[in-house]
Length: 282
Picture 1 (cartoon, one colour):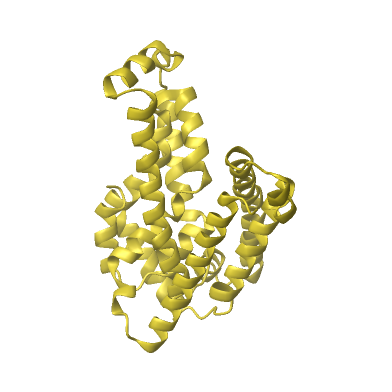
Picture 2 (cartoon, rainbow, N blue to C red):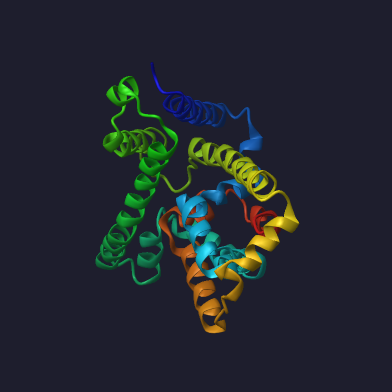
């Protein structure tokens, strides 16, 4: 009997594929102008929140208290206070017809192919361990939540779940992403799938938060009491670390390949940045 968790995951992935396919068809036919709305664009920025949000941030908060907020403080400051920088990036990206941060840097420095190749190489080296971390988080999730009986193990072995996820990601990228590299064309299917996923993430985080506060701790007062009794209450923050981590998270928000893709390449209008500047931090 197929494990329920595996069935739910497959259904969820198929739903994202269906949403992306429908969005692509609607964009081609011109029937769905709302695909180009500022709200879809704002929701797509949630791609910043990955496995680190569910795993790393929780462990970070348990170890270092409120310092984990710097992970999200940097992007919030960029969107709320530096939106004019993003507007400039969008304008330059549209004028230079860039499709990646390597294209942008190359166009600003004499269209150097060597510089573009170097930036691409550094991006691959830097993001490969991060992608591996995402795949590992999927494997850990299956390990924790799945019973892995004999039938389920024969379908997706415990040690091979990351391989199936990687194959699915590659297929999705080829089908809705890399088949079109024209800077004037937008990947509406990918953006819409990310927007739908953002709503799922939001409800998942709210559900987990409600469970922790009222299901595990018994309410806010009990939760605060447990925090006061833990080692986190004795943790003292370092202002230098706060500034440094905030700056790093802000730089990551601007420079990560996936963020540059949704912030600059997939931007339909500069007006979308006005909505995202307050909606995303909120």
